[in-house]
Amino acid sequence: MDPPLCANGCGFYGSMANRNLCSKCYSDYLKENVVNSSVKEEATIDKQPLADSNQPISTSHLASAIGVSLSSETETTQSSESVSSCVKNRCKSCNRKVGLMGFRCRCGGLFCGKHRYAEEHSCEADYKTKERNLLVKNNPVCKADKLQRI
Image 1 (spheres, rainbow, N blue to C red):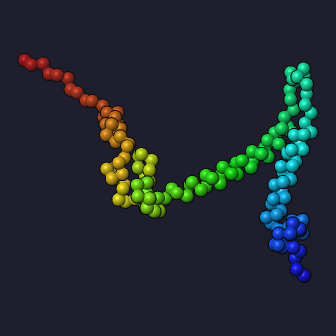
Image 2 (image 1 turned 90 degrees about the horizontal axis):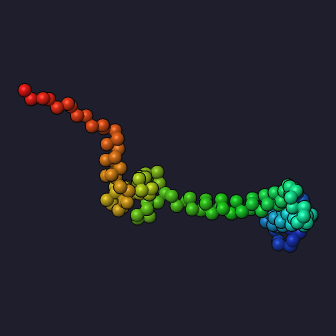
Image 3 (image 1 turned 90 degrees about the vertical axis):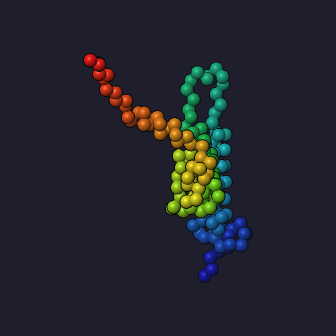
């Protein structure tokens, strides 16, 4: 016995659990239901006249409608962040793959073995003043009292 074809007529096989729809058509169906239900909830909210605006407004319906729309926006931002995070394993100067052997610099870049030195990748991090300030902080000045001459 063959499984039934998709009820939308796309040519793929559907399943009884998905209302005889294929997986793609079923996911589209679910998205439409979520959007339609949020629109219906917004339509059922009673609008109060301006004279009654001093009373607290019930936001439970609004929060649920907004929560549905916010969840779809967060999914799109997470997918765009995952695409940009894949480029982290390349040298900032020559765009060469560095893998686990990459070197982090104080300027914030990741570099290969050739460009790991500050002179090689024209680093803008100011090493000298930072290290000088660290030395002054960690090594206090020790002066002996002057001896009086006889």
